[in-house]
Image 1 (cartoon, rainbow, N blue to C red):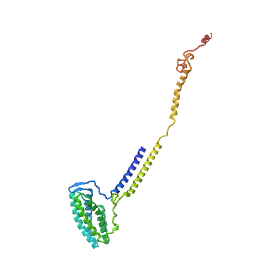
Image 2: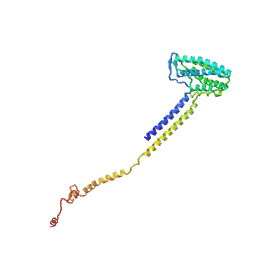
Image 3: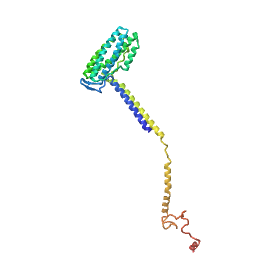
Length: 315
């Protein structure tokens, strides 16, 4: 049982390492590439998961940016920030109506409230006052538009759905204008914007040398898994050997001695048969050459020679 458990554990460790490394490499290769499963046929063309994801993300952007734009229009101290917030709030109201109409026609469910990250941004902005409020609201709105713009552009160039393509083209124009509004305030800190995502190993700029590091990682993990498995297997064998009972070495001699003792009467009988013949067998000897020796159960011998018999024999 111990050996079976150790073998199962070693195999599980090896499989887990291989799966983890494989998943890591696959994720690196396919970074930034939209999925292709779950495609639904519509009268405007196939609707992919990336198409549906675009509608959901635009709806989320409208939900929090409409409210934040209206708030900034009232609370900002910088006139440029007030003007940018007014335009963003008004245009997001129009864009929200367009995304809801598009989603209704395509049968895509949309969220009704901002997500956790957007709610955190709204809470952070509301906690600021004065010039801090102006910088914070501009920075967060600029950051949010920079996140959604690549998603729009990717769907715009790859979707097979005519309605989604038209919506993405229209939405891209909205987001470009909003970025221009925010950057015109002069309050955007470009060094604080999120880093650009890696295009993955399957991008156009990748070559075979980009596979060296993942390949070396895979080889190292396979070697480590093999060593772990061998160590566990050896430990299991050692534990099994330690639990075995000591070897009994006295059983064979005892059996041999008993066999020899049992064979002794037969050997003696054979020897007697070879030594005597029917003509020279002494009196009282049976035809098989065995002396007629009195036994405890026989009691008195069958014949007894008396003194008178002896004297008669002499005469």
